[in-house]
Amino acid sequence: MSRRHTLARQVGTTTLLLGLGLLAGCGGAPGEEDIRRAMQANVDETIAQANSLTSVFTGKSQNAFVESLRQEVLSVKKHKCAADESFPNRYTCQITASIRMGKNTREDDLTVLMRKGDKGWQQVDQ
Image 1: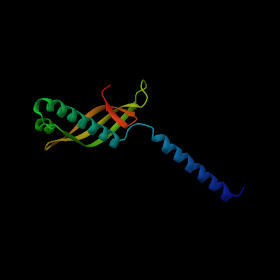
Image 2: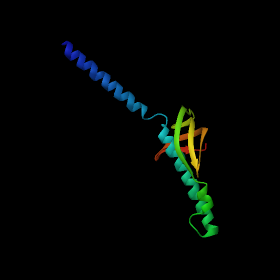
Image 3: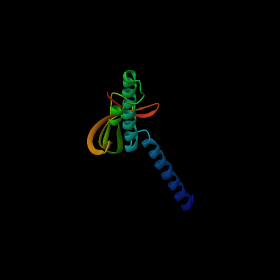
Image 4: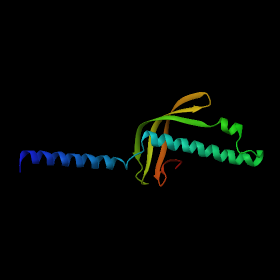
């Protein structure tokens, strides 16, 4: 076997191993954007439920007070995520989240529980 053929084979093997490593990483813990989207979806769902409940009493689909409680998850900085050995596809993540409510923005250090389901990552209570 020529030296050139051996080198090409080594490069091909290295590329294959790197590609497999990247694919294996896709099934791991949620990324920062996954967490941010899941947190925002949780906020949006809570507001929708509150609007639905208040519409029974007010006759309006949106309540100004409820809407004033709406938060926007601006960004998430993930510090670490640990897999839950008891439940597959579930992670406990330590994060710092930047959250805006009205004109105020704050940063909070939080622990969030994330689960990967059929519709992607979700923030869960337990």
